[in-house]
Amino acid sequence: MYRYSHSIGLYALMGRGFNNPVDVAFGSSDVMYVVNRVGPEVGVRMPYKRITICNRNQDYLGEFSTGGTAAGEIMWPASIAVGPNGNVYISDEALNRVSIFDPQGVFLSMWGIRGTDKGQLTRPAGIAFDSDGNLLVADGLNHRIQRFTSDGRFLDAWGSQGAGDGEFNIPWGISLDSNGSVYVADWRNDRIQKFNPQGCHLAT
Image (tube, rainbow, N blue to C red):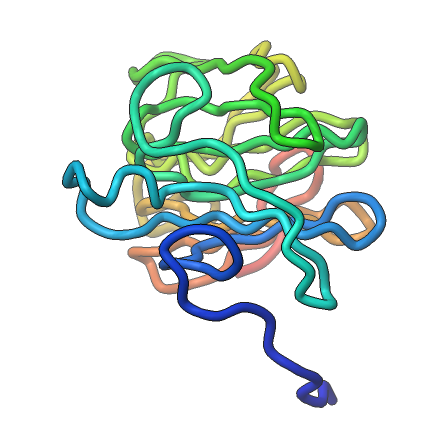
């Protein structure tokens, strides 16, 4: 049984606090990276799209990125993950890419292109690292899970559109357990599916 401890954050357009937070990831020393997706993509709201850096004690440590389409900017950020080397990865549904920042929020690189071929993305959502340091991406509108190296080189993929075992209808969230099993939130099929590390369906 889990017992409530405390809440972190408050509503804020900038600085300390959050605005429509959609995902969180932990870095070293209990540092938290919180994705603020904000609301409609109108000009006045674009600066409020950002990643907040804080900790469990609610200390505000900074923020990075902003709304836009240029390198290092975010439009519809969906998920965030911290790699083995501490770099921060953010998936973006609108820009169909993954952006990479160092632990302090300095932009490093990005990869991804819209499309349906292997290695291409259409509305990427959840992301998570496996035990080998490769990034799994829930490729939403392509109804599949794709695996990439940390620098964006395509490795493999599994899944297709449907409602059967191992099929997806807009996969959204993704997480791995200590054994390497992959759990996928299959949004429009209203279920969670479990796969082995190679992508073979285990349970629904």
